[in-house]
Length: 346
Image (tube, rainbow, N blue to C red; front, side, top):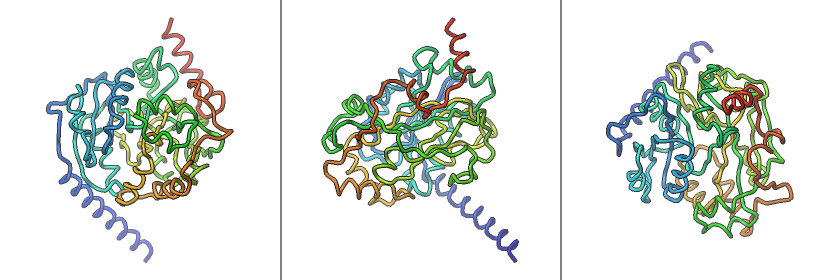
């Protein structure tokens, strides 16, 4: 009887997934970028966006300096001038799918990788994130990719570092994103929970089962200052950089891809979630019902109860570059990668 129920459950799940994919296929539309092709040696940035105009200038400035020349945007229903402004940028393609994130986010994130990034390196980034790594200012992305390819690695893990200002959040809500990047110069890693990569205590551990990790020092991290202030059990770990080869499943979850070989050190994502009017954004997303989790509502409850709320405390540390994060154990270093960088610089 139990086996029969299991069979029926699998059949129902397959039918449900097939219906979901059909709905997505009907909804997705090409908006901009006819003939968009990513060269073999290029890295494709994949960006899920909705009303991202606030971030655009600094976003393009940062990632073009990083060496990214090709951007695939999947728009989730922007009502500001996000699409019009992206159209003016070189090397961009835009597709659009106006569907609830709670049900379709994996398909939205997967679509650009499978459409434009087959057998290419893909960098998943959000508009409020800055991807950083040891060697960025010396060998840069080309050296990083050479290291990963030489080892047969197909993914790089990164930890998210929530950036915030010394001032209350309400005092900086009208800052431009450029102003926020200057003002948000603090972080707090005093309360971070760590789990082994394949720990069954991770809620999505089944998705990680077939991934290979090059170092046992790689950990999944949760909490941070958002856990400390808002009680969020938010995941801080991502696989932002992947090689989308034949066996890889890109982004079945916002924080990971499947069937990848994860390299032996970690990169960094500086996260500026609290730039701009975060209370208004959270109110809009909470009322829309688009998100499966209750993090936006939880933050909104705290923000509404304390007009002078600040993320700054005596545990805050000023940004001093990426090196202190290795010393503090937030990031994992690799002797092999450092030797590779030193040899490349000779």
